[in-house]
Image 1: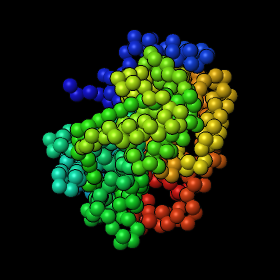
Image 2: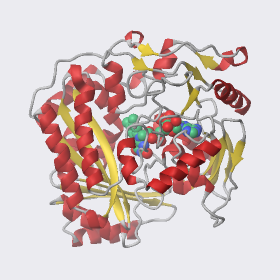
Image 3: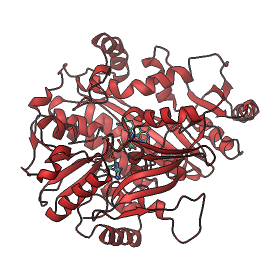
Image 4: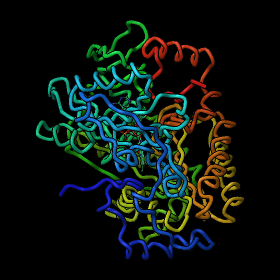
Length: 527
Ligand SMILES: Cc1cc2nc3c(=O)[nH]c(=O)nc-3n(C[C@H](O)[C@H](O)[C@H](O)COP(=O)(O)OP(=O)(O)OC[C@H]3O[C@@H](n4cnc5c(N)ncnc54)[C@H](O)[C@@H]3O)c2cc1C
């Protein structure tokens, strides 16, 4: 069955939470909130969401690949952050692309770019549209002659699977599950599972420097990019050489990893993949508190054990996510996963021993109260967020990374600043945190916050909380994003994070590759 993308919500319309599922969860939400939710207000009909756009006339030669209808423009008007979804429901006209181009091959892609260049029309590459940082939103582009959303979903072929090199070469618009399906017969897998796995693309992962399933070693997608093909706005193709490593100057792949559509269109990528693991093991470990669990995490990653997954929930996250699946957790919880071609039970035993040295209490292997329950909640969360938006619940996340030496102070300060803002805005609510990725020198902390909002001012309320969290991250020396990218939303803080000379170098690279400035303008250090 072909499913329909929800133009103003997460994922597919067919997979939305059913009323009875929502009703089952509401009491737990009310309990954690310690306050009342606003009245239920269903989302508007798509057709009633007003969009702002100019009228552009595409050349006849492109008519077959260009859509001008309201539904297409609406679907491409925003990513899928809380801000995006709340904005789409707010009742004000939303900036949208004037046209949506969906080229079917590289020739059509070149033609779209040539037309846009010629007419000084902004082009915003669009993979799955799951950006949570304002990466695909045509905002602040009123000075352009128009905006085209460049949907890459038709460039979705697997070009080659090299079993020998363990590399897949595929077009950028392919979705996560389709890439894995092509690898399965070869006994290979990407095993890159962002929470947006079903709705994000290879090109989007690379363009945002995303992260997924692996918590160590292969955490970031840029470490797995072997080579890229990028089309510049003048139609030139840049192809980097497939190499396992090189020291011939700065790495060209790294210029486009994280380029967020601003340095050309990633047309295809060669990605290092892994053998579909024969062995998978997981255990959860209970800790009295988060600092003890963090110390155990550090000791495990510094012991060269490289767990494939290492999620560490602070007590608030453990309580809330457990309760949503009917089993509230106490204290902090570490979820350890080891997978691979060989049996990794010895690594798991060593990691468990280290965890015990730090006060951890391993749960029995079959205990599903830890890992399984948490994973289910994780994948359903975006649909839950939509359902709770009907009650004006502010529910969002932000992620950062810091060195171990900044912890646990950084955690406490960012959490407290965010919690203060939550209480200021909603009168009640909560902030939770989990470790999602761990490195020998530091860790990625992923914060979630929730507060009761008001239907008429959700975006402003969200912004107050989000800004407080971002300010605290900045003050503590963390990055504004470990894997969600900069987008339009993080520019204010990114300016402080990135040295001025490097910002200048990026601007110069942009001038060289895109002299007319049509590629995703307004992003990065333009202003
Ligand atoms: C519920 C939810 C959960 C998420 N979980 C994760 C997670 O676990 N890990 C994670 O890393 N991210 C996560 N994200 C963020 C998002 O899914 C990632 O940033 C993802 O990599 C974006 O891929 P996409 O194909 O949807 O790209 P899009 O959202 O379409 O685009 C993202 C940016 O990349 C540019 N772009 C896209 N394709 C190309 C291309 N071919 N060439 C040049 N530029 C391009 C766009 O212009 C834009 O700036 C999540 C988002 C949501 C909504």
